[in-house]
Each structure stands twice: as structure tokens, then as C-alpha cells.
Length: 310
Image (cartoon, rainbow, N blue to C red; front, side):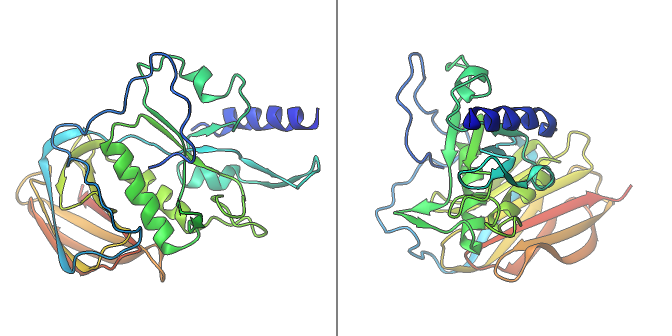
């Protein structure tokens, strides 16, 4: 009865809050289609036998964004398992309510983990032919959990991009509460971990859901994804480097969605050992193209926000 009451409370709060790799693969369900192949224009998967975390590459990474070429839609993928409440161990007491912090980073779906009831994913998405769902994922490789580190934030951002490339329709990070090794929140303080900053960056990327062509990423954890808004006022570019040996990027964004003489603002924000999605530079420019050359090491995420002057 105690567990049932918790589940009912969590399910009730789920209604209020609504605004790449599963831990253990689920048994194959009847009619469940195999994973989708990369969509046209997406890089094919690359098998890498090196241990995770092994640096590769060096120098400057060349990236290019073409806002004149639409390649799809940027999806949320900001679902989570468990929450928004954390419970004191072996009691009926609520230790923390994470509703507002989850809203702040764009979480829009909470799966009641292992409830197997009306709020579980297989009930909400019964047609396995229609949905491609990753029901659990996190930053843990060979029992090494690191979502509390800058590398964890970069892994999160690169994983979201990989799932977008792979055609995942819905994804649920495990887990939203203050789990000591896997939660989005710190145990004890209840503050969001740095990995949650990747969610917050993706939330801002969703302001520009029309995905445009972006090249320069790879299948080893260096990712670049870009979008523009439907009316042509904004462009967002998200760059993440989990484990490469590169120390800078050279980005060229072309065919910006406005006239040649239009002025615009460029804001660059970072997630790394020194910054928590903080703006480190804001400049203005004019025209339909932009070039940015900046130092950028592994275990980092960069969000570039380009806004047309109105």
C-alpha cells in the first residue's frame, strides 16, 4: 500500500508537469520493428574498438551548418524515468519535490518506472510499429558512472544528438530524482547536476525545431546539431565533444534565413568544468553567413544562439 500511494502521487504530478543506450534491452515485443537505419544525409554508424574515453583526433575540428538545407525536425527526447518526487528511504516521507527544476530544463514526460500501469510507456504507446522508444539511458560505461561531471554533460548532449540521428521518437533518461549515481539531482542538496545542463541546452535548441544540415560530427561522441525557427528569426547550433583530442572548432554557418543586410546577435554559452550553460560571449554581425573559431576541448558543450534583429 505504501508503494501504491507513492505511485499514485507521482502519476498525479506527471499530469501537472507536462508543459544512447538503454541500461538493459527490453524483450522484443510482437510487431516491434528493428532499429531504423540512419536517415538520408545522416552519417552511417562507425564501429570503434577502442576503450571508451580514449582521445582521438587533434587540432581544430571543422564544422559547417547550412540553414538553407532542411533535414528533418528536432524532437524533444527530454523524457525521464522516476520523479518528480524523491522519497526518503523506507518511509512515506517526500524528501524533495523536483517539479520546478525539471520544468526549468525542459522535461516534458515522466515515466513511472516499473509501475506497469496506465502511465507506463507500453500503455501510452501501444502501437510498436508507430514509435521508436528508448526507455532508459544514462552516462555509465563499464560500471563507471559519471553524469555528475563535465564529461557526463557532453555525453548527454552527444547522446541526445545520436538518438535524434537514429530516429528515436521518445527517450527516457534514468532517472529524474536524486538517485546517488544516476539521478539528475544531487543527493542531499537536491540541486541539478551538470548533466542536466545538457537538457537545458536542448530545451533552447527546441526553439528552432526545423533541423538544418550540419556536418563535422562523428559517431564517437563529437556531435553538432542545428535548427531554425519556422518564421526565419532564429538559429540554434549545439556542439558537444565527449572524448576527442581536438582543442578547437572552426564553424561556418551559411544561408542564414534572412536578407543579406540583416543585422543579428550571436550568443555563445558553454558547459564545461568552469561554466554551467553560462554565456561567455555576445556579439553582433550582419549578413547571411557567420564564422566562429574558438578553443573547445573535450568534456564540453557549446550552444550558439543566433537571433535576427527585429
